[in-house]
Length: 93
Image (cartoon, rainbow, N blue to C red; front, side, top):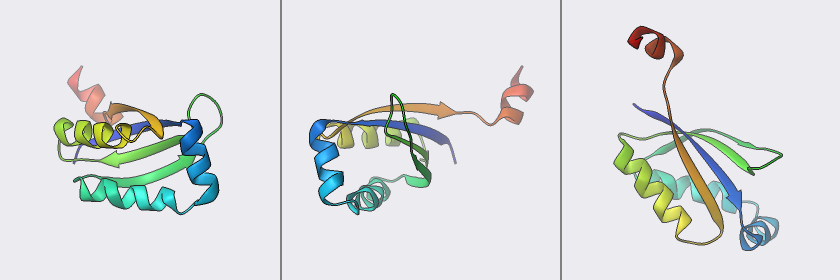
């Protein structure tokens, strides 16, 4: 299944939501599953982004739907990157 890196940056409202209800992070992961994708790994990070997620989705359309749905809430900005396994990348050269 295709893999994507989903980068997220919380808005001030998103920071407040997480502060008040840290379990909201896991709830969003379940919502991602309802949209047809699966969070395989997740990290809170320092710097430009607040979270880095490794997500599997059947196709780019599904991943776009995930990003659009989550982004429409106004609590975070999202950037999705298609991830190509290095062996596949090398083989394609």
